[in-house]
Amino acid sequence: MKLSGRAAVTYSVDTSLLVSLKQILPAVNTAGCCFSPVAGLSGESWHIRAPQGEYLARRQTREMAEMGVSRRRELRMLRTRHPGGVGPRPRGLHQNWLLLEWIAGSPLPEAACRPEGPLVPLLVRLHSQPRGGSPLALKVTLARYRHQIDRARLTPRWQRFHQALLRSPLPPVVKIAPLHMDIHAGNIITTGDGWRLIDWEYAADGDIACELAALVRGNHWSPRQQATLVAAYCAAGGYGDAARLQAAVQQWLPWIDYLMLMWYEVRWQQTGTHSFRAAADGLHARLQSR
Image 1 (spheres, rainbow, N blue to C red):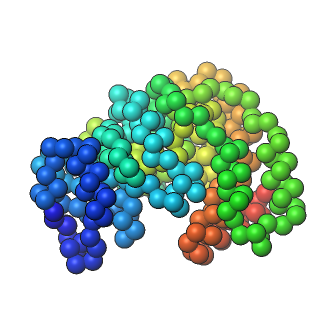
Image 2: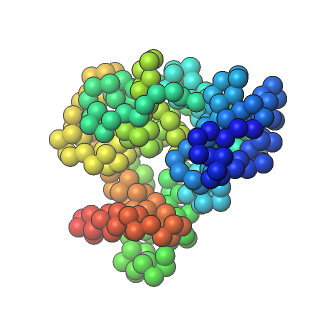
């Protein structure tokens, strides 16, 4: 087994990854592989270079499960995505490790992630593919987050808002399709064959208007940019009624705001990272202003 770059000095590969790699790809000789951690030193994701190809291994952890991440669901969603060339090809799941093909390329520059242009055909292609069989369980996720946040921050007003929202019906469905639910520049890879999406850990089947609302909020787009996105999406064949889709996206925005707020609250509780709490405070202010 080889560790690329400085990895040989700083970290080692978990034995469970080696076992899972042999189970998923028996022909791979782990002693001849190069392993490098992806996105920091957590050991949760590894880039594997083998004579047979390059792969990405993603671990299921307790913290991820608390966030609603399921590698089994991710695998299920990706199994029907590859024919459209949108995401990575899944190779298999063993115990806590999901193995995917490695998508070689560069993350999209922030300035290139705009509500028009090549992003829109990528969305339309994604939403035109078969469903993965894992419905978006938004209310279940919000209820799970509620039990993991700092109770000292959970005011009576917040509890009333939470209970009222979960009793409310979700916005009317425009069209059910596979959703990625975490589209931003860092998760879009530019390759020689076009743009591809990575990090499918929150992917599920849901309303396309929910995805567009998440895209608007996740990228901090203005109402004008939101309207531009909807118009471009419909012009590209994503949906036939721009006015109805725009109204539906608007209805989803409070749900997405609250989902993001709760996600930041749980991540702050898990990590103590101040930026997560600051982001949550900003979303609290937005919800209270309504």
